[in-house]
Length: 205
Image (cartoon, rainbow, N blue to C red; front, side, top):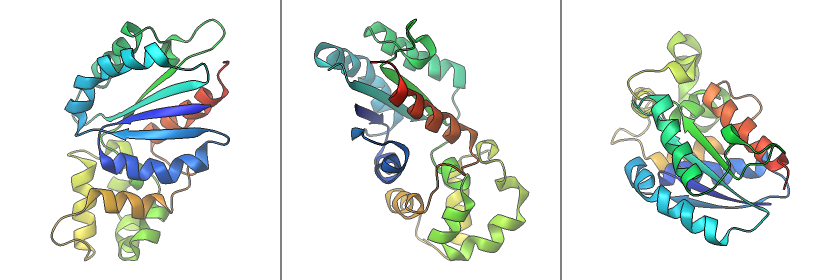
C-alpha cells in the first residue's frame, strides 16, 4: 500500500516522517506540506479530484489539519465533503466491505498537543522540562490545553531556557518526534489519528 499525506505545514511533515515508519509496516508514503491550513483547505477539492483521475488500487490518502479554534464538526464536515465530491469513500462513509480511500483527521488544538501527549519524549528532547511537566496538572490532558498548544509549548520551553528568540516549529517537531512512542501517547486526537491509520492499512482493497 502507498499513502499520500496532505498536511498543512512543514512541522507536521517533519514529525510524521519520523513517526510513520513506527506506525505502518510494508507501506510506502509521501508527505505534502502546504503553506498553512487555509492553503490546504483551498487546494484540497481540486487536489482530491486530481487523485481520483489517476489513483491506483493500492493507494490511500490522509488529510491532517489543526483544529485551532474552529468548530470540530464543521471542519471535519468540510474535509468529508471535499472527499465525497471527488468520489472517495472516507472512514466515516466506508463501503459495505469496509473499504475507504481517504482518512480525514484533526489535531486538537494543534499538532503540539501530540508532543504534550508524550511527556517522556518532550523531556528526552529537552531535559530542562522535567520538573515543569510533572508538576503542572494543566498539561495532563493535552487536547484540553487552551489558548494554543504551540504557544503553550513555546512558553514552557523558554521558561526552561530553550529558544529565547522563539521556538522553531520544524526543529522542535524533529527533536520531539524521534523520542515519541505512538503506543503511549495520551492525546486523544493522536490516538484517533493512530487508530485511523491502522484501520486504513487494514481496509479491504
